Length: 288
Image 1 (cartoon, helix red, strand yellow):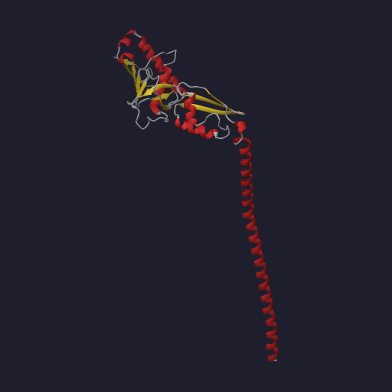
Image 2 (cartoon, one colour; image 1 turned 90 degrees about the vertical axis):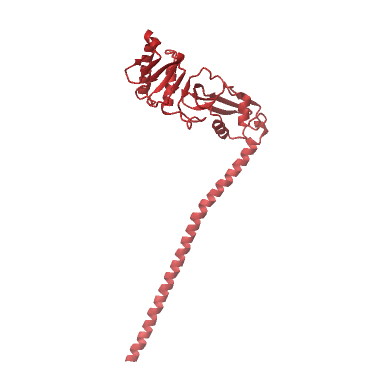
C-alpha cells in the first residue's frame, strides 16, 4: 500500500512539475513577445520623427537649390539701379560703402534684414532704415537720420536727439545748447539718456517752441535735485518742476506751467536785471 502511494505521488508530482514548466515556458514566451513588440514600438517612435526631419531637410535643400537657380543665381535679377534718399550727413556713396552693395550684384544675393541690422548697429545717428526690392533690378533705400537738439559736455562731438539717443556729429552743432553733468558711463554713442538728463531734453523742447522762444545756453544736471539753466548774458536759473524725472502727461503739464512762470519773470523789468533766479520751490520764485 505504501508502495502504491509512493508511486502514485511520484507520477502526479511529475505531472504537476511538467505543468509548471510548461506554464513557465508559456509565460517566458509571452514576455519575450511583449519585449519584441515594445522594441518595435520604440523603433517606430524614433524612426518616424527622424524620417520626417530628413524629408523636411531634403525638401529644404531642394527648395533652396531651386531658389538659387530662379533668383539668386539668375542674371535677370541683377541690380541696375539703387535709389537712396540722401540725408543731411549721409551721402549715397557712404551708405553703399556701409552696406557693401553695388550695381551689378544679384538683388537676392544678400539678406535685407541682416544688412539693415548691421548698418543700424554701426550708425547710431540713423533713426530708421527701410530697404525694398523692386524687381527685376531696382533697390530702394530710405533712411531717416536723428536730429540733434543738444550737445553733450564731456565727450567730443557727442549730441542727443529729442528722444534722448546719443550719437556723434561734428557739423552744425555750434548753436545747440549744452547738457552738462552727466556721468562718463552714460556718454557713449548708441546709449539713451535717462533721469534728469532726459528731463533736460524735455525742458529744451518746450523752450525752443515758437510760442515760448526761450534760448538756453546750457543745462547742468549735476545738482540732482534740480537743473541749473544758463541763459544768454550768463543769467542762471535754478529750475525744477513736480514729477520732473517722469515722462508723463502730468509732468509735461507741470513743466510748461513753470516755463510760463519763468517767462513772466524774465519779461518783468526787474527780473531782466537779475543774474540769478531760484525756481526750485513749486509756485515760488526768488530773484537777486
